[in-house]
Amino acid sequence: MASPPVFVNVHPNPSNGPVVVVCNLPEGATGGALVVRDPLGRTIHQQQFLGEVQVLDLDTRQLASGVYSAYLEADGIWIGVAKFELVH
Image (cartoon, rainbow, N blue to C red; front, side):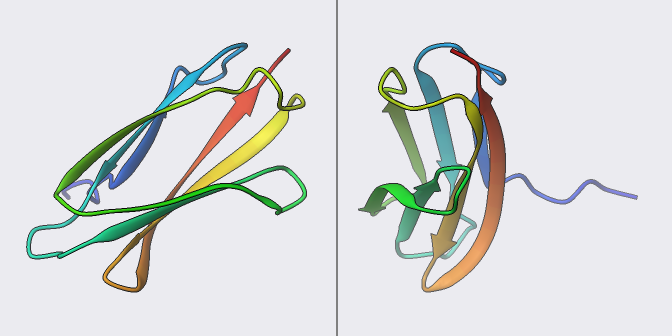
């Protein structure tokens, strides 16, 4: 059985510094949005974009240790989430 597609990925994970968030929109999608939330569910970053692939360098130096979530939306539909851990 084939693995489901991965639409959002964060590396390195875990991290004690900056992370790279890679967003891949499915074929045919016209735009996307990335929302990063802290361990309490508060939005700490939000960005809309056009195109199939978006790469975001996220500076985490001011963020507390914990597990964060990166949510990806394509054309108004949530299509993926990646959890990542910050260890400072």
